[in-house]
Length: 97
Image (tube, one colour):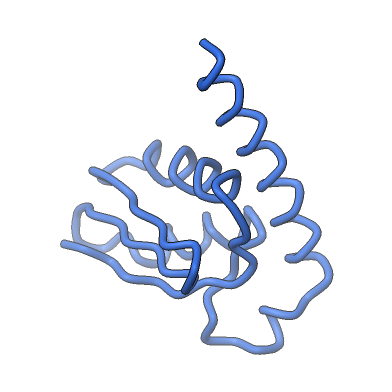
């Protein structure tokens, strides 16, 4: 099954690295693809994972676009910024190795 979630706060490849790293570690997930330009996250995995995927994205600061109140939360923006920086650093360290 492929899950398609539209999320807020995706800014760069650092965000992509963090999102893919987190989601790909979930039991039952086979792969993740992120589109930076439109905030789309595609996850291939077993049935019944949507809520877990959504919660994992929210934990990183990337809430689904279904709730305007959540999307513009300062906490989510701050979390996504930190997640993005961590992902960028992880991405840079793999480029140099």
